[in-house]
Image (cartoon, rainbow, N blue to C red):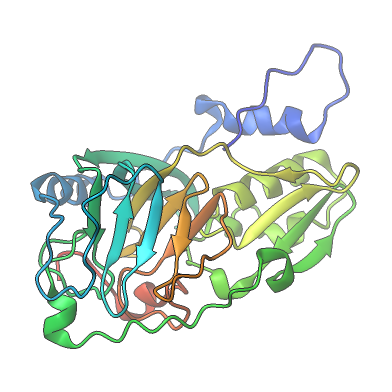
Length: 291
């Protein structure tokens, strides 16, 4: 998330001032969230080796290099990632009552310039594809809307900040539940509540939630480098989606491009009804990379 600068002494507190306080490492809630599960996820990631040649894949990459960072959805197959995109485990850290409070980066996997990520949920080398989509007859039909985010989202106007919300994009990461839920925080005429609402919206991996300044209309967005996060959710005992960050283009199997956004989540359990995006089904079916 954006790191606000230290507020000047004597200034009236603003939303950004309280964001600064929320972002201080010593201000984050203590999180003892399943360290053994985090370590196990890291160990599994370390043991995996990427592959760029997939049996049963109908997509044949060209021999040319891939200067552009892009994720291409292969029809009924995996995600084809090009442009040397960094790939790392990203774990949701929860506090004692189960609410998500922060992200913790784990092992960064070694990847080539191009690689394939499992989309069907059946690969034995997750997060990488091993061709299992062909063996199981995976139906990866894309059903997600091609409309831009602003046309999918509703708007909630609070006294200090506004909130845009597109529920079909929800990846059930649960950062929005802290402090009485982000939708209630937006309605409070208090800069501390507004700052917490902004922080919760910025932590939302799917981009379902976007907070913005009512006075200036400026959207609050975290500063994210182009990368892909392999989401693990030990508090729920499940493996989550692929967290695509930093404005990476996602191209549909038919060649059209989805709106390029700072943060989206792609389904990797194979069961989303909003493919290629995550709709939270991984939690409902108990998807785990070890299965």
